[in-house]
Length: 340
Image 1 (cartoon, rainbow, N blue to C red):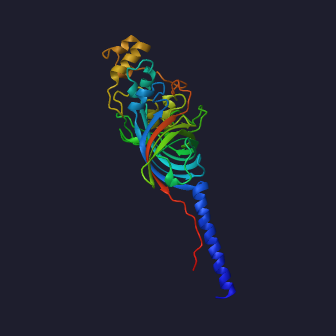
Image 2 (cartoon, helix red, strand yellow):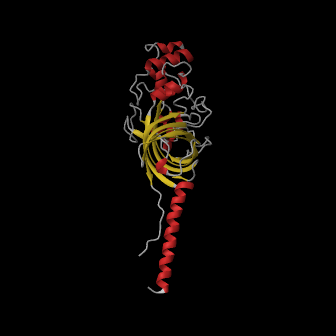
Image 3 (cartoon, one colour):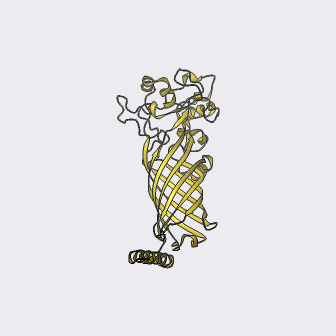
């Protein structure tokens, strides 16, 4: 073995020794940065103009939908991690659930309903309440945390066509997209607003906890609130448009923008006539309580242009996610030179 070969061999030995020493030292002294990937499934609840947040228990129990997610978390320090997540959320609401509720009579008469599938891409910072151990496989059995971040969403509210609708644009009872119909007259002459954007931003924040199953896997539970910078997840955010103005857009737009006098609710199948007559008898004329004196063809217009459509809400739309997660920890890799 010549001097050059001995020199190369010694260099490799030194590098290998240094690498192993560093690895041992890092295991004892330095935090091992690593990543985990998680798959989640859980519930989703919306709060807004159709599902009032001032009735939190009733609104939550009656409007539970679902969410599924996949996310990647990078653990940077014992206290801080970064997370990127893709989440599919379904939310829904129906004014007919408010039948007979005091102070909700006008909302019931509005008779809107919707369903919205939201695709959410979020970036969040995670703060671990209990610092993580230096080695991921020696992490605590329970690890609580809080998080906050920023997300971009794509959404598309849809609703069922009235059961008495007759026209070539849609079939009665069919689900149709609401934004192209401009149900509040958006973009029409005399209406200042343009159609709302199907992309929006929200702020996710909340808390969670992870339970260690074994060296590689955790179970997680997370509760997160999303405050959206849009009031149109439910297609409601402003005032009514005149029925005749919507007719100029299309008969379907008028049918979807003015649903007060649907006798059978398209989404729930409820018969609404008795409740409609009670509302008119109380607020317009007692004669409307008697079908013999006031057939449905005599019902007056009660929500004209400028009438508030979005109720008393002063907040943009909100949705709440609860998620159960299966988390897989990816072991960090430290590369060392190989002696040949």
